[in-house]
Length: 122
Image (cartoon, rainbow, N blue to C red; front, side, top):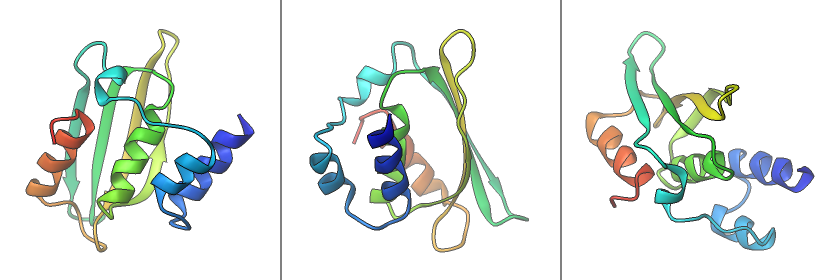
């Protein structure tokens, strides 16, 4: 658990390339299909007042999902402003991220691209 905390803290702080970090801790990211026994519920909502995009995902709470999502945001240079990470009593992940790209909400094109990458379609 300690190494996972260090991994996540380092990944989210932009101090190192996520691929090198995963290799350093001998972790690998499974194929995206591993995380989704059933199709996930994903909602993107642009908040122009706060200049961010809210992203909500609900899916089976598989180990590594948070790293999978955080890594994709990092690789796309998307800033996680805040996040609420939760797994309910039934084992479903119910995670919400507030995201920005260059201080702005994500564009529709970025949203579709991220959605495709999360699901392993690109």
